Image (cartoon, rainbow, N blue to C red):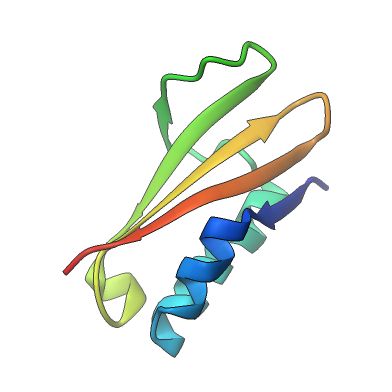
Length: 90
């Protein structure tokens, strides 16, 4: 089992979401502990060769509110994910 954490910026953004949006994002964080590279994650360019960056898109139907993008970086060396950004749509 891997670990998944929020960056300071992601933690702050999480607090600005509605309770249903927070629950949807938290479910992504928990899922990353089981599988840090799920099929529905889209890979992003990463400058660090020791890690991989991804985004998971949550639709409004999944959040009970707005569409949300969860951007995270996974490090195999540390066996952990860091949620870098949480971006909520209008």
